[in-house]
Image (cartoon, rainbow, N blue to C red; front, side):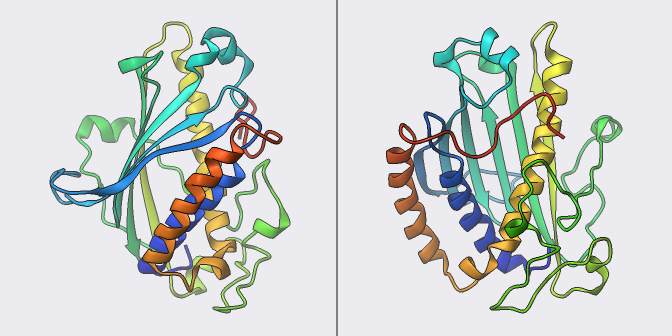
Length: 263
């Protein structure tokens, strides 16, 4: 990312709130249940213990592939998300307690580093886990998804406030300052006989698509968040929570849908 690590904390929080609004409407979207500080919870082998905790419910009945909506009762088509933000480390767990219980969860851990390189095995994976790991590189200037729009394209965007951008595909990383890296570790655990492989493949493809879109937006919305403070963000989050509750059950379906053709 063409940002400092400190700037990206604002970008992360701002984009999460704004994206939630853009994904909510027509009976689908985000419901924020809790958003509060936490302390004395050891994460990443005790390296991080305090930060901000959020608990959200994603109403996804109208956004998932048809084969899943047939198999899972409509009232259970909700994803529960718990997130511990100890920036520069975050840990998010997605699950479906009402129906799948312990048979399904997706864990998404993130670390943020200045510069364009990171230490090897930053999450401390075991030898067995390293053998299973697949490394996917994402260039926000070049990863065009089915969600493409010109106003969210880093290859076209130039910040009026910072002068950064547009990002030249394939070369901006070596010539742009400041720069930082977001390193993510995503683990998908699903136990569902006959559908496990199909659903895990769908999960991996959907994660790449969503991560790509999120970070492209974070950069292209820079002029909206770059002058904000954490206090400004918390105020925005509370306002967003109220708007989400109002918007979820009205209007048209909005935002990203997940299909088997996701790529």
